[in-house]
Length: 123
Image (cartoon, rainbow, N blue to C red):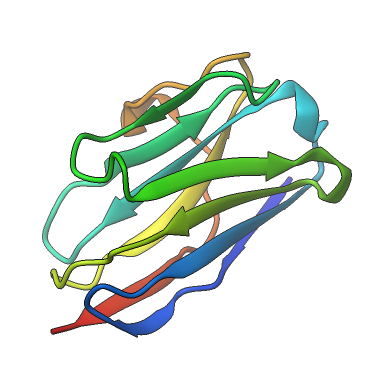
């Protein structure tokens, strides 16, 4: 099982980035997917989740209206479109699969992570 996040980088405040999570080694369309982020010295926090059928999404209050999660089952890839980014301690974004139709917002319930991709927003 492998997860590879990409798409992070440096962007100005108010800008956009689209993160990708390429998955392999499991039946992608049977898993819910979650995006988390972790800044230095802070706990990993949930950003967004999407159910295995794509019909149910969840967002952290801090990103509602700015971020959009999606999946492409044909490409075994999940995405996180991030708009109107704000400056903050550069977090690393991680994706994680959940072997249930609907994903949890608790990082403690996940045991498989990618290497992460860092997002830096300059002011």
